[in-house]
View 1 (cartoon, one colour):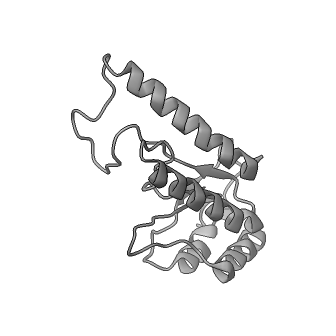
View 2: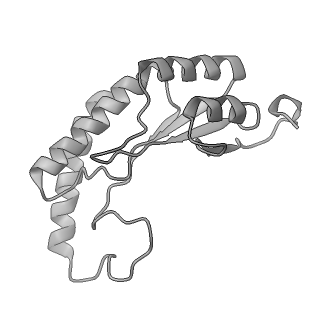
View 3: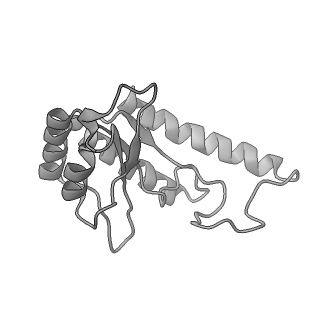
Length: 157
């Protein structure tokens, strides 16, 4: 059943971007017929990333217009905009800002940004959560996070 034949629903149906393989555009074309929103899950490591280039972004915009689908951009989980390491924090803010500026052309519905308190992890590991004795760390983390978000606010409005 394709999206256009579904009854009007009081909610939107969405999915992540990589369901049918590694090609973002192929996934977007296939998924756009089935859902209302596609969350483009981005990753970035020193050696590998899947951040779309200008041509891919233009094609995503075209898919959005043709298929009446919206996009949400999930920024890389490796970004550490509240890192105590100033260089790492500045690099993360710079990359997040650049991604948002590049993606602006196809007007994503939302951006998702995780701001880790502890080192990024993809699994639940006991001991990496807040404890009552971390008030000073929490306050410092909050200041760094807010400072970075203020910089990003200039892009998002």
